[in-house]
Length: 248
Ligand code: KIV
Image 1: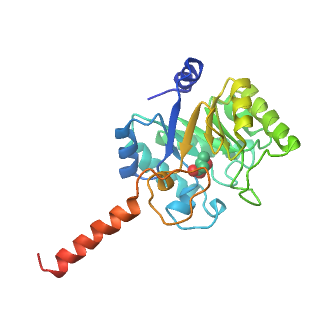
Image 2: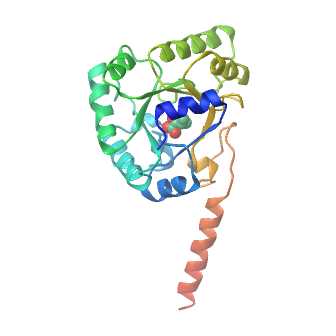
Image 3: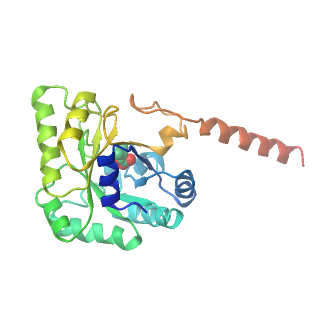
């Protein structure tokens, strides 16, 4: 399993890092078999697995079930557990919740933004932290690209330097201009993982349901569908139905 130090070594060697979300045992096994560097149990499971509109609609109870399943399915892969909305609302709450993920086998936790005093406290307790900047789905008013204005770009850049100085080993940069992703990647020691952050970040993350075409929703502009599992699955189920009807 890659440690935060291994991932930072890859950055310094210019080796790209692959991360994909997975939420359950079967797909975690698939991601590990494919050899992905990191699996993110993202709170995007609120949308992909549970059909909610917003990631704000799930909490620790749901996340713990999915993180445990992924840890069982991919015991040799670095698993990042996403802190759901308000689970990091203050330093002690964040630590208690992060510890529950780590006890299940997660290698690190991810949190959105820079909640007051939280990253400092988690790092003082040796919890490996992946930051998340740019578009922050838990609190965003819309899903437009962030960092387009000079002011917004500076704020994201400053936040990236700040979380780097606090000892985050990694930072997800979501839906920001490519040049900003490039600049931040050059400026920080932590590994930058883009999702709509251009091609110059140290690595990339995609939501598995987007990458594998597991749903019929419109993809975000930065996502690529590598296979059409919705079509494959529907076809397989139709074949099964036909065989049942034909009494085979
Ligand atoms: O929850 C999630 O899947 C994420 C990714 C979009 C980075 O945070």
